[in-house]
Image (cartoon, rainbow over all chains, first blue to last red; front, top):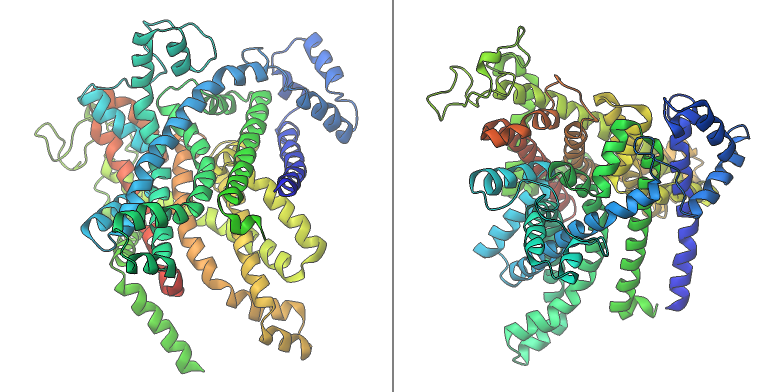
Length: 334
Length: 293
């Protein structure tokens, strides 16, 4: 097990180097003088010469890459052209919001998708099966941004149950402790803020969680069906175990193995979906930040965000694989 | 030989048409195709009337007495007929998806076949590149590419094509690895056929089934991602009637309760994507019944 994890960690090195080359290439492939790309069109002569010096822009490209990589490894992606703040600081400020959104969405996806898939499989070809799989196929086909708009239209505009966007009611103030607003409001005992924060979280989470929910339901169903066909299930039924025990205790446990992988793979979808969800709901997260940076041609920010997202994605995938081997001893002992 | 081949195709068609969901998907896509081809005949109005008919701004459709004659789905903020924009939009969206998937297939098949067939260091290099591209969520990589090459429908298509290529490459590679070990390929090598002949006449035709299935499912994702880029303002630019762009320009009016402006273009995307997904699922089940659940 330990050897497997070390091997996987070592394999990450070339992938992350590749990611860094792509992010580095962004600035050099972008039209125009790289120095202007880094500091912006309207920088003063002094700022320009400083940047030239800092990034070694008069050196050959591979030297520049080395200089840049060293700074990145120290967490320095330079400053945003627009706000003049450090990119790393700006990402760190926004990340808790993206984290809260994606985690609630994932929670929603698992809480609905998993039982729906198990139920569908245990009652194959029943009305429940057709209904939930019908919803699931619509669920994987729906554009996230449109679903978000529809939720806003119904629950925000017509029913007025939930706010149309943002992270918290602007009338409330919340002391920043960890940056995670749900956590901060609990720590500071600010329950009016907590209610507002949760109300703002609901619609975006449903919009973002629907596609993963549908995927999880579909995979859980087919994985369950596969397990239910196996001999040990027949044996259990034959020896008179109740259907409940067979399905929930024995079949579902075995069926969950591929589902874990799908949840991990869906993380990429969640991050991509967050780009759209945050844009619609004016959510102050990293994903909306990167879209804004592309509009503004704020390349240091685009660069920083891309490396950041790739890093998260790669780590999540690794974690998924490790959990996978952990819960399925058959892989571990191969 | 001919007879068995024909009956195999026939069996495939039978299996596909027994699948009600798949047939439903096929009907949806046929409707969208007809809309795209005969847009000039079907659309009741021009998608971009000139001069603009601003006096029709956000007027509702057939369900209301306040609606405009000849605009069954109502009008957008600039007074343009929503139905007509959706009909013309089918042309833009389908074409964009076809080009994107075409690019992905051309790149993916080349990389996958070369990688799988020759193996060795070529394979290692290509697969490492594929691994690196898999380290990015697809839409994010597409956005990064657009950040470099610029906005616009043509650039969005290229970006999505590049982003999808690695998935295609992996699928092809694994099926090539399997086919390569078959006896008939060995026989070809023994009688002295060139690599190109073996690849073009034997390897590619035999790995075409997964390409068709994943190509269809990829059409669904390509339509979604093209619309997403359009929606973010990084793909098709207004006034092009592209579904994502139409949505981007009308969703702010939901506050004014002009629900039709945002609802119908989204439904068009939803059903087209659904259609391709259903066909893809159906083809997969028909080509390989063992996978059916």
